[in-house]
Length: 182
Image 1 (tube, rainbow, N blue to C red):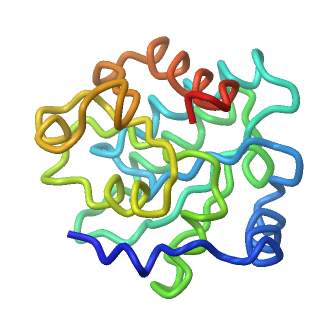
Image 2: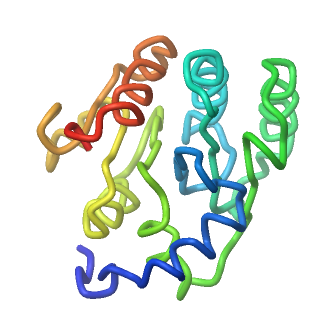
C-alpha cells in the first residue's frame, strides 16, 4: 500500500506555495495524476472541467501530474489538449500540465489540492487514489471494479460511471461546492 506518514500535513506556507505555482489562489484545485493518456480518461475530464467553468465562479483549476509512459500517447495527448482548448479551457490557466515532478514533491501536491480527479477508463489498481486518501484528499474516481475492491461509493469516494461526462461533472461540482461532503 501506501506509507501514510509520507502524506502527513504540510505547513500552510508550503501549501500556498504549491497552489501559487498553478494559479489556484482563490480557486478550487483538482489534481489529476498519470498524465494525459487514454486510460486516465483525460478527454472526459477536460469535458467535465469545461462544464464546471460554466457553473462555478471562480472557475476551478486542474493540475495534471505525469506524462512519462512506456506507450506513445502523443497523438492522444495532442488531440485531448486541442479538445480542451476547443471547449474553452485555457492551457496554463484552467489546465496546468506539470509533467513529471520529483517524487519528494508528490505528498505536497496531494496536500495542496482540494480533490483528486481520477476518471480512469481502466486501471490495474489506482495507487493515486490511496495516496490521495492518505493525504486526506477527497476523491472522485470512475466506478471501476478495481476501485470497488477498496472503495465504497459515496463513503470513500464519488464514483461516476466510466465515461459519463455529465455524471463526472456533477461529482466534481459536488465535491468542489460542498465542504461537508469533502
